[in-house]
Structures are given as C-alpha cells and as structure tokens.
Image (tube, rainbow, N blue to C red; front, side):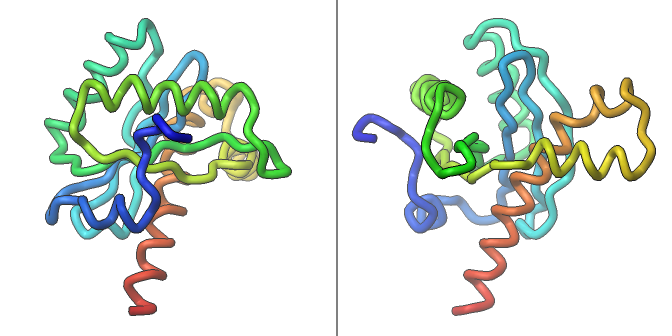
Length: 161
C-alpha cells in the first residue's frame, strides 16, 4: 500500500539502531498485547497488556514504554485471513501503523500473526490455565508468539549469511 509506513523486512533491518530491543504488538479491538525482545534480539518475553482507550492515549502509553525499554523498532502482528487475504482487522492494523508512524520515528514492520492467539490459547489450555488466567495473559503471550516468530526469522537470516 502506497501510504503504508511499515517497512519490508530487509529495509526494517537496515534502519534498526544497534543495541536496541524490538517490541511486538498483538493489536486487538479492546487490548494491545506487548512483548519485548532482549538486546540480542533472540528471545521474546511477554510484557504487558494495554487496555485500549483512544488512539492518542494508547500511542502515548506505547511510546513511553518504547522509550523506557530502549526499543529500536516495532513488530506489529498483521492478522491475515487463512487464505492470505486481508480483512477488516488487517485494515485496522494498517491504519494503526499509519497513525502511529505520525507520532514516532521508530521503524515499523508487520509479521503474519495467523493463528497466534489460537496457538497461545491451546498452550494455556494444555497447561490447565483457568479461563480467568487465560484472559489475563493471552494478549501479551500472543505478542510474544508474534515477536518470537519474527526473531526466529532474523536468526535464520543471520545464520544463512
């Protein structure tokens, strides 16, 4: 998309500052799950869940966290349909990226998040988590699942070089 600020993987990697973390976002209609990478960009850790209010308030909170955690780039989960097409949720994610890019210089990229919440929920069910516990952690764990997939891809790229 012409006015989409998100960068393709190679361009995103080219502009990332060294010795910074990546933040992964699982963007929902009511919450935003956050996960943070280590400085070596090898491990994603669930961080927190932001209850969505208004975009400006959500963006300010997110950018405060990015500043406090030395974040150099944002990995935004893109909820594609199973056939790879984009529906309303993917369009909302792209709109969020456009709006966020007007408030920060941090580079943004997308990562296919198909089935991330389902995979995390299945893992939590297998761990016999209560419904209340699952509801409390699923968004930040889905963000970690998204970010870990991205980090694993980065590791694959650097190992192939």
